[in-house]
Length: 101
Image (tube, rainbow, N blue to C red):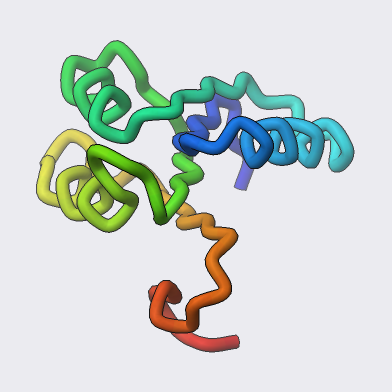
């Protein structure tokens, strides 16, 4: 699947830089919007100020964490179909969501 609009939500500046470098490295030619605050991102999505094809979401953030954001977006009829990929640098196995590989 080809995405032309990517939204990255991550509060860590280093992780944001790594993500953007990785996108360049694999030659992904998508517009990438970057936000550090999940609550602000949710507000922009709800007002349709942002309309991404896919969201990359950090799990551990202040104010609103990734799980809270995911719960809110999936409860919204206009936003629930946007694919969300969770990211975390946590080594804690309890942080993992979904199936083990």
